[in-house]
Length: 399
Image (tube, rainbow, N blue to C red):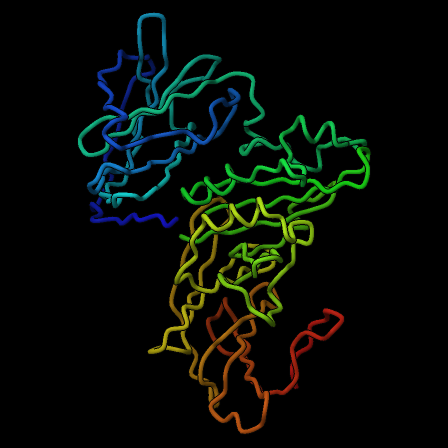
């Protein structure tokens, strides 16, 4: 399912919200579910230290839904709902978003902007859509969804050495059997929410091997962080743009569709032929999506749209430590190169662009352009009949 959402306009400044620290009686009269607009939180229950709450907006109203970035949170007291105050001078950007009928979108409520210490109880997110307020209730209480586990799973490095099938089942880890249910993971993805899937392979009830697929949105693209093993950590992570299948095999890839011969693909062997996973994967549309090559550390992104008018152009974006990002369109003008068809990151700020060449009279000739992403410049190029990755998985610079 595609997120049919567009931003209509962006105001030049911020809308500032200034509130005192006290709860105030709610002035909200919620709209009816019969309107066809549904607001829901990602989880029903959160721990008191949860840093953010994601929510989805589904539109089945028969018309376009319009809304901004603003949201509020209310707490249920004995005599009704009360609005939770923001910290002083919290600001909102002011785009107007338009969500087509049948579309789904998502948002995030970062609780650090609120002047409130969350405690056990009932709460709700309030959002104005089409000049009507809609709400989604949730509970603060005993929950695995918290500061260190925003998607409900504890960090793998914190798990005990004797972690087994019984513990995995209790933690909500998906065991790859006939009862495997991947629906929530793919529903979150379809809505555009950040989410995580953790599944287990095991030879015996005392031997469990875990795999994490963490999907997060950066630079307007999904970044899938792949870790596995009993102690998989950030330093072991690999980053990809898509989950793909050829109908039986399942892989993580830079390409939105299956490619017969690509080096930026990792097969998820345990999911091969898993009908539940394959069926759920069909719900996530990747039509017209660009190839997305994430750097080894997941901080830089190169995208290819295979633009017929600009076949030697590509997008280049970077995530900054502590938040923020920057992006630009780049183009190479390298002799002999006709079109970019792939990329391989070769270092922290260097990438090798794989190109079709203008004169392909020699069968199998491929162009390779080396690009410095920090200086935004070509550092070298060559043509070769040889593949850049040999049969043993070793990277070779073509000569």
